[in-house]
Length: 73
Image 1 (cartoon, rainbow, N blue to C red):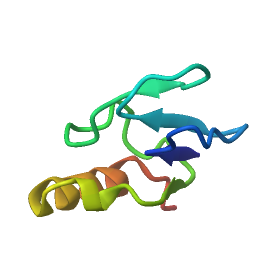
Image 2 (image 1 turned 30 degrees about the vertical axis):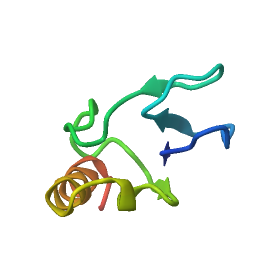
Image 3 (image 1 turned 180 degrees about the horizontal axis):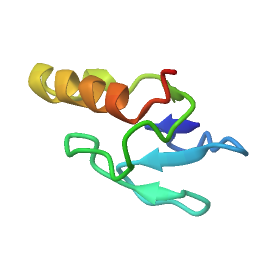
Image 4 (image 1 turned 180 degrees about the vertical axis):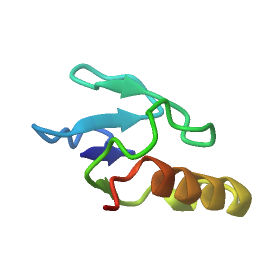
């Protein structure tokens, strides 16, 4: 499970991802870039108050990339 744009809301059992590094963060990443995960390797993605910080094109690319990494079967 991914917690994308987590800020200081780190969730145990999730890979916590944010643009800004902070203690306890698992991955500091700009989600305007493709996510560094293999295809179909993530069970779920949680994000809140994050996509509005992206351009429309970057948000669409992020959502497509989320579909790529999700285990949908």
